[in-house]
Amino acid sequence: MPTNQEKVSQLLADSHFAFINSQNNESLHLANEAIRLAPKNPDAYQCAGDAYMSLGQYEKAVESYKKAVKLDQNNGNRYFNLGYALATNEKAADAIKNLAKADELGCSPENTVQLYNLLGIICFDIGRYKDALVNLEKAEQIIGVDMDIMKRKAIIYGMKNDIRNGLLTTNQMKLVAPSDYTGYQLAFKLLCQANRLDAAERELEMAKKYAELSMDYYFDCMTFEIQKYQTDKDKQRYNKALTFIEEALKTLKPTSTEVIESYINAAEI
Image (cartoon, rainbow, N blue to C red; front, top):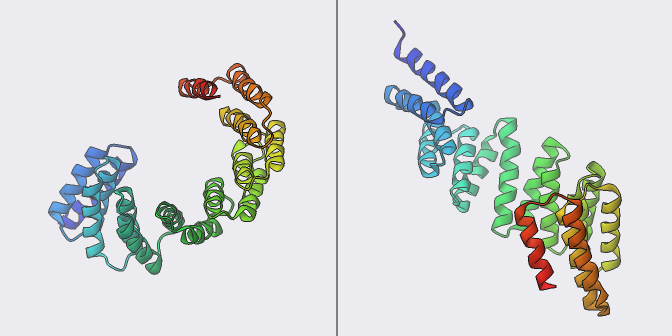
């Protein structure tokens, strides 16, 4: 006959298996049964927290992860999970505190990358741009080139009005993924921000040559014509802007939202 410890181990294994197969209610039920048998087992609360997170019950997830931390206070992964749940529950200050503790104690490699990435996002959201960049660069050092991280960095440089570093980042993006419009788009926006409209126009020209075009590209072309009008007062630019909208609707297969946005932009012009 299995011992209590063996029963708990099997319940936790079954809970984890149910979780990875998206059977979240079943996973939670098994985790709670493990908690009933072993109320001082941190893994049982970990499994419950994971299930609560997938079920969107973030406050209950936070409480479960807090119990796991209390029972295993020298495990950085416990603090990471709690920090992640707190961030999801929009409690930035508490999230940063627990993620910093996770960094201090050390986490598994996969959690370490997510930790720095998450800290970067949180710091960006609360306006701590320098800290956001530091954490995103730490994540980048671990996983190497990553488009999402570079995109966040470019946006932060724009917020800091650091056009030079922003453009260096977008250049990296274009080298890594020349067919992705994102790098050209961010460079275009940075150059418009710096009022370097000729250089901004060249980004659109390069995008047309190398990138897979999207509604964003055509909207940016339209934006460029309107912005140029502020300089030269050439009313033909309005006609050209409308032409870009027409071309987009003919060339692409836009979503209904993009079609509506196109007509709104046309009406404003």
